[in-house]
Amino acid sequence: MRSKFEKFTLIACGAIIGVLISLNLPVFADKAEKNNLPIDELRTFAEVFGKIKSDYVEPVEDKKLINEALNGMLTGLDPHSSFLNTEDFKDLNQATQGEFGGLGIEVGMEDGFVKVISPIEDSPAYKAGLKSGDLIMKLDETSTKGLSLNDSVKKMRGKPGTSIVLTVLRKGEAKPLTFKLVRAIVKSQSVKGKIVEPNYAYVRVAQFQEHTGEDLAKFLKNLRQQNKAPLKGILLDLRNNPGGLLNAAVGVSAAFLPKGDLVVYTEGRAQDSKMQLTATPENYLKGGGKDDYLKDFPEDIRTTPMAVLVNNGSASASEIVAGALQDHKRALIIGMQSFGKGSVQSILPMNNGTAIKMTTARYFTPKGRSIQAKGIVPDIIVDDGSDPTFMTKEADLTNHLSNPKDADANVAPKDKDSKPLAPPVKKPEEEKEKEKEKEKKKTSDTPSGPIEPGSKADKQFQEAMNILKGLQIIQNK
Image (cartoon, rainbow, N blue to C red):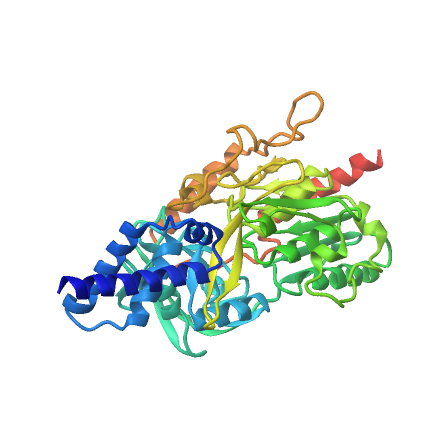
């Protein structure tokens, strides 16, 4: 009996070793070469695998066990790494191209529940009123407690036109809220905007997708032609932008920075994770042979007075753009402190059609700031009406990566006299009114709908426009 078990153990160990090496993880390859594999731990793994196969209450397929083990191995590292089966991998590719099925929510895990990082603009979740920080407790009648993130996401996906009820715990609300959402093909238009008044352009980037940089360049050129004169101010809105593709973030930054300026650099253990990405075509064009969409871009846009709106829902790629423009003193950052996701995830396809999404590097702003678990600190704080104590940030997520810099490495930029660029906007009377409004909302079970960004009801946008106009006047003087 023992010899059979030892034989099974060796076979299982060989299989696990093969899996580890197939993931292209250098650390395991190095250990294999040195014959220094963690044999005791692998033997325990094989023993647990065997016990589940023989004694679990009902039969379990080998494929399911291996997939769950792989997913657990990755999700245990940090909140943003995961194993992608063939269906998940396909959905991810569709999402980066700007069209996919589902509810349109960027989600993570917290305390065993699904947490909303940001609803995607114009999606069913956005229109229903879901907000960053919402904790999804139930999907229809199924509790999310104990479900993996991938399983929860699968339950939220489905045939367009079918409905699902989400039970949500929202901090500040007396009892859970319910949302009935109808699944749809989410076509995320990543770039929107308008001439808000003569000579002033408002541009919103909702997500960084494959064609976001190109779309932004076309959009800004059209707005400038529509204005029939050089613009006097540009307001770039990155609020509730959960991020996306790194090269798209470089492309958006390159539209506003001089050619060759450093946008972001990354540091990781693998050699190919060490990059310096500048505002040059080779860093924002995906694949060779593509035309440079910024080759005939109006040069005056790169010197037009500019402000950037961020909030707690601005994460990852949007923080890269805000950090680059802030470090180069190209734009004034306005709003609330951002989410603080300063890591890079690489999608590594496997031979069987699956893939892993794994954190491979931390990124740093041009001046060497890491925003990991800290976020971008705006030059001017403008409240968006949210209670800061109820906001979810990267630092709140289980197993989040630490910030490699000192505690004071990410503070708001200061001028030569060591004074803030501008004082925070504080209006005590407005704060009292907001508290009253929050108390009224607690008495209602009806979730409130979203405020249209860039509208008259968007008080943060209105305040940012006033600041931008003042900035233009100061620069003229």
